[in-house]
Structure formats: C-alpha cells, structure tokens
Amino acid sequence: MADNVATDRVRKVWDRQANSWHAQRDRMHAATRPVHEWLVEHLGPLVASLSDAARTDLRTAIDGRLAAFRRADGIVLPSRCWCGLAVR
Image 1 (cartoon, rainbow, N blue to C red):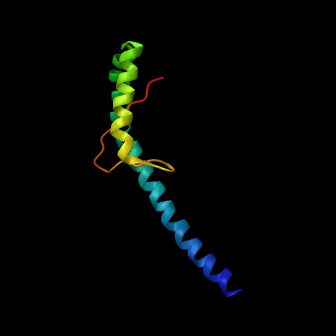
Image 2 (cartoon, rainbow, N blue to C red; image 1 turned 180 degrees about the horizontal axis):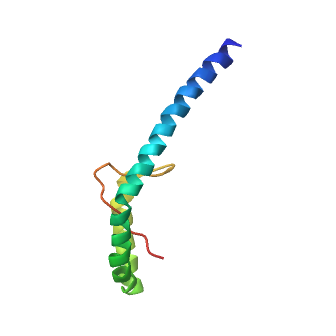
C-alpha cells in the first residue's frame, strides 16, 4: 500500500512538470511558427527545384551533420539550433 501512495505522489509531480514542459513547447512553437512558415515558403521551392541528385546530396549532407544528435528515440537538437526544413 505504501508503494502505491509513493508511486501516486511521484506520478502527480511528474504530470504537473510534464504539463509545464508541454505548455512551454506550445508557446515556443507559436512564437516561432512565422519563421518556420517563412522558411518552408521560401526555401521549399528552392529545394524542390534541385535535381534528384542534388537533393540526394543535400539530404546526405544534412544526415551527416545530424549524426551526432541521433538517439534511439529520435533526433535531439541543442537549444541553439535555429531550423530544419523537410520537403517531400
């Protein structure tokens, strides 16, 4: 019974903290959304205009630079990272 009380207490603290993290992420996303939209609007057509070989070279170069930031659960970028661009 004591284990359940302690677990419940820790879970409540975790949930409060996680909610704060999500709120901060949402505020940051809202604040930076115009920058992201500008990048996609202006750089997307440029990247799309590249030849298949040039896009492959660009993707390979980006993947190489991201290698240091890859983790088992995804890519973790430092806080000083400004942007990324994905084009299908």
